[in-house]
Image 1: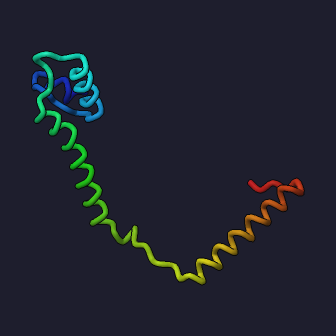
Image 2 (image 1 turned 60 degrees about the vertical axis):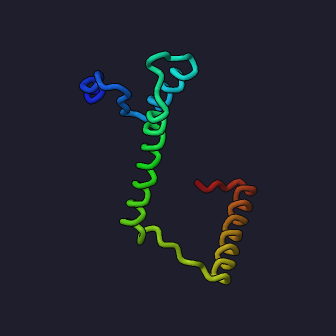
Length: 103
């Protein structure tokens, strides 16, 4: 809020892309006249946050890739895991039908 108040004299200042998009859409739809945003402003305030998000995701992934490393599970192990899951689900269903509730 303080930053927005301090820079209120600047034209097309954007601190929240969602708010800026809403203001620009309202101005465009209702014919904002002289204050209508230019095509360059549309590009800047729509694509700059999207580009920043993509770059931030790339940096995050590059610095923490080890945490998200995915190993292929051998097929037989995956089958056993599925069988174990099915057995535990069947046990819960039988117990629930007998009036036992697991929380």
